[in-house]
Amino acid sequence: MKKISFSARLFSLMLAILFMPVLLSAQPSATQLLNDIKRTNAGYLSGVETVSLVNAMEGFGFTMQEREHYRKITEAGHTRLVGEEEGDDISMVGLLNLSADDLAALVNGASRIGTERRDGQRMITLFVDDPDVIESFGDPLPEADDEDDFEDFSFVSMKLWIGAADYLLYHVESTLENDQGAQMEVIFTLSDYERHSGLPLPGQVEVTMKGLGALMDDSELAETRRELEEMMAELENMPEAQRNMILSQMGPQLEQFEQMMEGGDTSFAIKIQDVRINE
Image (cartoon, rainbow, N blue to C red; front, side, top):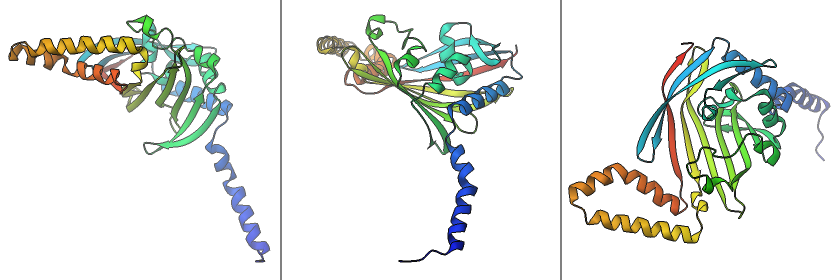
């Protein structure tokens, strides 16, 4: 048997002791993470009272712009942004809009807190699969035009990627399921962060939806395909100039719709066009 000298064992023990704080700090506790997010967010908002920004949604063959307004509030020592409209709270401000209760529920309710590297930087990950925690954040897709399509879907899990250095939200993957067990995924990717009077905002939020075909049963899919085939046949019988004009306007939407029926990905992006602080 190979003998290990006392000095070698002592050196190994010293290395373990020296690097122990690094290893322990790699995965923060829920309490530490919660306090760090609150402290960092308060710093981001220290010079901000109001935020006004223009969002441009690009996808499905069209662009739609809308100005949103936020104001800073402090509740029970927790500082955050709130929007004038309910939908404003889920657009571009990431963790900065969560109340103290919501933030605590998200962090303390996570079944796993870990660390990963994503896009070249270290991230803290939160995995939440407790229905009570997820349901506390409201109904999925509450502003859908056709409520009947979405009312049976509920979130079953969420995974969030948060920057370990800046505590900003960068990525969210969520899974929804209906009463029949059909699942769909909604993925958010926040990128191109820029600071505005100290406040970091993402220049773009990309939203990807997978499995939208789960919204329709076989008979509805067959009927939709039939209607799409009839519309394409009508286009073929139109004069070329008129057909080309319609296709140039609706072509991307038709492609997205066909992908949706085949169970493919459907995506759009929200981009910031203008930001005004304290005006």
